[in-house]
Image (tube, rainbow, N blue to C red; front, side, top):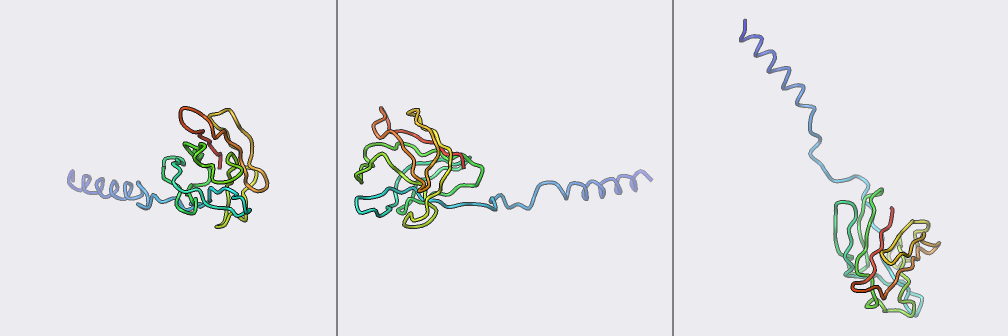
Length: 144
């Protein structure tokens, strides 16, 4: 009889533990891609490549188009935004865009920078930072 009780108990435990864990797929379902761009002197939005960023637990470097990936709800910080980005006449103006070419700016994203600048992105997705922050460039965090 004791063997039967142990066998039944073991079977019940297997079924109970079978629901624990998860699907094994840890990839978030709502990954979003935006672009970090600047407006060159010809009013063409150009991707800013090579900027270190971290979004939630993930980190990366913007690609040649200025693309970065995040999960909505994560805060994203861009590091070392400095005067080496002076690729345009407006070197302290960058944009968060939703499409290649930067035609669609993402408005109303709250951000704050180490240089004490804060605000929300404007209708074009523009945000302001201090390109002359020392010893490193400015770092700005966006609350997506």
